[in-house]
Length: 304
Ligand code: PMP
Image (cartoon, rainbow, N blue to C red):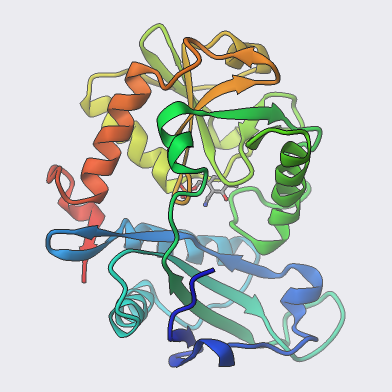
């Protein structure tokens, strides 16, 4: 991890090395936290944060779902994030806001514990590799099922949910794959450990629905809008594993993963075994937007 000088903690910028927490913090023991992953891209007008407001709206929604009171507004978060990037002199970065129940009482009820908030930002390259972006990655259908809303709320980006993701990721890597794909408890496709999934079949784009228990990805929302504007029909529906095997093209989306093609699942070659044409077109449009070259969506870039 590439360290920067400052981390924002509870309203103040402090040195990276001083951004510590008590070992009896509630969130550390019980996973009672919510977080975001945001990217800022280098553009000819300086760093631009992609869909910043939408990420903080989702953070507040995650907090609402887990009943965590957050003492900051979206605007407050936006100001703090902008300041952090300026003070750390970053041109492009990954941004990680996290709110968690802190040190106070032990026991499962977090209600009397303070809510601690941090925002960190650092340089972070491609999540699934440069080669993955061009050639596609190999995936394994996980033996771990994606949690559902009777178990732990899938629409909350809560720290607790990421044990599920981490187990799936480790299993996939241990089996020699690049990434996992999780089914939900109904047996249909949910998502990757940190990515939403899209399928191309007969020139239409298919993806999951909220009821399939995937996180409502901001990149996925972006891709649906891009696709519609490229006249590619977008259909949200439950998808079964077999449909992935016989898809023309598949790709993951996510703030970290961006738009990453999938070329193989459990020994089945997907389509041509390379990045498909529609995937490439969507991926190129996505990078043109995030880098400020495509100016069709000015509301998505927050210039610093
Ligand atoms: N699903 C999960 C489980 C994730 O962690 C992420 C990353 N936040 C995504 C999907 C993609 O969401 P987004 O496009 O908003 O980054």
